[in-house]
Image (cartoon, rainbow, N blue to C red):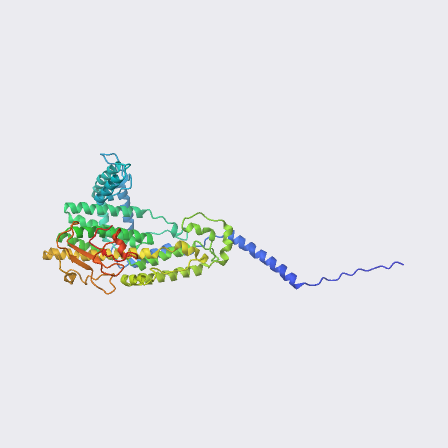
Length: 505
């Protein structure tokens, strides 16, 4: 008899380790899938209109100033200015404006430019003599362009601009476009207009028209003041450059020629009216908006950095492959990066607000001119965005020095007009011609500027020497750097002074 076998099924044994491993793999693959999805679909998440915040900060800073906002009038004036040079052509040579690299500097730097060409001609048998024609043609065209200013209303508009203390560039909605991508086409035109004002100063000086001379000087200072107030450090640097040009020309004229009392009074009034420029701390706080805006445009809604967009910050390339955003998991989040920029900005301001003499002394003892941070793979955004603050601080110091010493030189000239001779010492200027003693900003001990009356007019037409101990803090008797006058104001040029009565090189 055949035995019938009955098959029984037994339940499988539960294996918790294997189950946990499989579950972990499934979860990991799911998480990885999500991360890949987030990486390839990562988009910026701009939520704050930093452009509007920058505008509000500027308006708040200017709230106590007189006048209406003249920014739109400034843009209108730049357009009219562009019309004066748009179709310029020299009748004698048929050379059009803009040929070569000349502009209005062909007039206000004519002597030095011609000397450079003569030196090039002597050094090279291949020198193109047509460069002399270009220089002469631009000199004539500069005069022609300036001759149109009154007719086109440029002078009147510049007077209105100079009379107002308020001007704010309207900013677009930076939740729609990043601040770093905003174009500033007017900057070049404004700076070129300042060059035209320098040429106008020289024309007025040669004609003895001191009213026009002082007016052109003041209009240039106003353009620089307005730019220094605006929303980027580039604006500030352009404003510094403009005001430095104006003070440089005045300083040269004061050093090499005796200005009449009428001119001195007009110039002093112009300087007083245009003296209120924004401190560097203002520009640093405004610039912080741009940095924070760049952060929000390089992070997604989860606060993760979008690595594929990083190269666009410095225009080194287009967007990278989206898959690279997977690595964002190990990078600092948006909040941490924003906090880094805010803290760094405060450290820069703390340095910039210290007296220049103390900062120079610190640098001589090895203290960095700007806050240091250790660059690493975690600081990829900082490495691209943080500017060279030491250069910006130095530019600001240089302008303050020029402005301050222009006031001292003007006081010396006013004393000479009143007394028929130069003061024997700077102490005699206080308090009638200067409210405070002419101390040297670079002197750690608060000594007066270096001053020496020359026994006779020298080959440059100077009758006195005025100088600062500059970066090294030592009185070197007015010894000059070998190349650039401004070198004395920075590290690396010991045993030199910054000579205010030396034409800037």
